[in-house]
Image 1 (tube, rainbow over the protein chains, first blue to last red):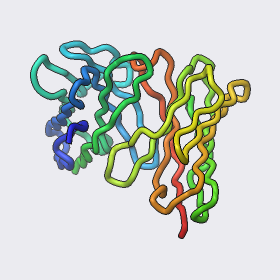
Image 2: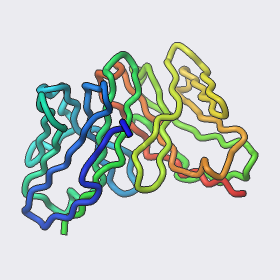
Image 3: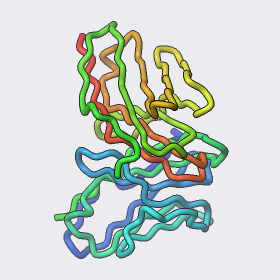
Image 4: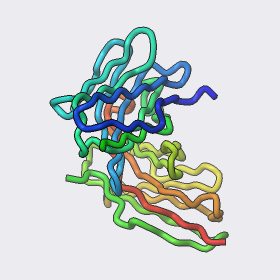
Length: 114
Length: 113
């Protein structure tokens, strides 16, 4: 399966701990996007990255959240000192980056903060 | 401020009939629109898209119509099948893959046998 791979599928963290979410894009895709879905809501854009570069982080909360897409390895979304309000489904998507090429999504990581 | 709106949270249709899912947008800068389908516990799956220079795009049972003057688009599924039961998201962007994709809140479609 050469689709977008996210792990873990489920992650439980206590308040104050760190959460690390991983995403491997589809083969041949060099553009990665992170989205968050709260209950009863649509997907909200967080950040758009290319290898070693953050292109657009306008949807990222200013504190505690960070993202990277290193030269080697998966993209990581890191949430420090998690709070209950961070509980959500986090989806990663990838694309080739060519004009209007659709985003292909992974199956998400469900983060629960207790 | 919701730039992409799906005003019907749910829709129920009989198998074999047409399903029409609607979407409105407010940002006239949007130049490309996409529809995604989502099953529970899975990620959204790309269905069909349309450029703002077109008013219709068809792919098998799925057709998307765009009315730019009304800032409205719709997804038609005909004939509807029980396997089409899912949440459908309308999404829009400008700047293509270089921009961020703005999603509506989704419409849950139920197709009854």
